[in-house]
Length: 595
Image (cartoon, rainbow, N blue to C red; front, side, top):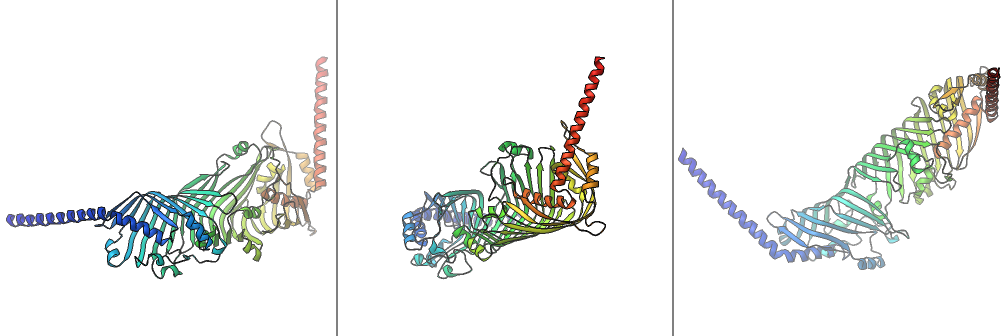
C-alpha cells in the first residue's frame, strides 16, 4: 500500500513538473512575442485609432506591455488627442461632430483581446478596456448641419478598417473615477463646468459592416451607463453646498435615478443674512427618490439639451427663510419669479410632466418688530407640473406651464391650487386659483402673531376660495371666505422683552365693532373681497402670494385699511393717555416728597 502511494506521488511530481515547464515556456514565448511584436502592436494601435476616427484623433503613449498567454495588455501614459486641422476640414465638409474630446490617463488596461483571432479571422475582439482615473475634456460647438442627424457616425468607421480587419469589438469599456470637464464654445466667451468621481460604462462597442446603421445602437454602442456617488460642490457665492447621492443613468432605457439631491446652506438661519449683510432668502432643499424617464441621450450629447418625458420626486422638503430684521438690499427683484428663472437657464430644458409626491414646503420670516419668526407650511404636497421648459420650439406650441397641486396647509386644512405661468411673458404674468377647506384658525397663529401682530382666539375656516391674476407689479382678483366663530386678539411688542402681549380693551372693541364673527352671518349674508395688491418690487415670489391672499382675508373679516387705521389711531391715543397718566402720577409723587 505504501509502495503504491509513493509511485502515485512520483507520477504526480513528474506531471506537475512538466506542466510547470510548459507554463514557463509559454510565458517565455509570450514575453518574447511581446518584445518582438511591440513595435508592430504600437504601429497597429496608432493606425487603428487614426483609421477608425477618419484621422480626427491620434493616440500617444510611452509603453505597451502584452501577455499573449492570458490575452491581456496595458498601455502607459495614454493621451487621445484631436487634430484641430482635421476638425476644421470636417467643418468645411459639414461632417464635423458637435463634440471633440481630449483624454489622458496613466494606464489603459486591455483584457481578453484574443490575439489569435486577429491573424486567423481578421477580427479584433476585446473583452474589456479599463481607463483608470482618466481626465476627459469635452468641447462642444453646435453646428446647424448636425441638427437632424441620427446618433450614428457620418461615415461608417468600417470603411477605414476594412482593409485590415473584418470587425472590431469591445464587450465593455470602463472609465473609473473620471474627472470630466465640459467646455461650451457656443458663446463669445467659453463657459467651463466640471464634475469628478464619475464612473462610465460603455457596452458592446462594435465596428462591422452593419453597426453604423443599426438603429438600436447609439454611436456604435448598445448602452451607456453613468454612475456618480456622494458628490458635493460649493456654489459660486459660497453660500450653499449642492449634494448628489447615488446618481445612475442608462441610455438604453433613458432613465436617470438620483437617490438624494440637496441644496444645503452653509450657515444657520440667522447667520445666513448676517453673512451676506442684508435681508436675503435662504433656501434649504432636500429631495429624495428622483427619477427622469425618456431622456434623449444623443440630444444631450449633441446640444446639451435635456429633454425628458417625465420626472418624479417621491419625497423631501423645500424650506425658505428670510430675516427681515436686517436691512433690505434695496435691489429691485424683477425677473425672479420661478418661470422667469427657468427661462434664464442657459442649457435647453424640457420636462413634459413633473410628478410630486409627499414634499413639504415652508416659508418663514423673522420679523424686526415682533422679534419672532413666523412660519407657514404646506405639508404632503403632491400633484403635477406640465410643460417645464425654456426651449423656444416647445414654447411656440404651448407657452404655458401648468401646476396642479394638493397640499395640507399647516398640516391640517386641505388646499388645492392651480398655477398657470406664461413662459413668454416679459412681465412675469401668471395666475392662480384654489380652495382651502376645514382649517382650525388657531393654527394660523404661527404666522399671524409674529408677522401680523394678531392672534386668532377661535374660528374655523370652512372654505376659502380665491382666483388671482398677477404679474411682477400687481395682483388682482377675488376671494371668498366662509368661516364661523371668529375671535381675534390684537398684540403689541413689550419693549426690552422678547414677547408679545395682548391689547385686551382694543381686542374686545375690534371683536365687537369691527370683526365679523361669522361669514355668512346669521341672516345668510355672505361678504366677499375684491383683491388689488401692489407688490413691493424688492419682495419675493412667496411673499407676494402670501401678502396678496392675506389682504383678501383681512378685508373679508372686516379689517379694511380704514378700520385698521382707526384701530391703530385708537391704540396710539390710548398709549398717549397712558403715558400722560404716568407722567402726572410721577409729578404728584415728587410734590409729595417735597412736602
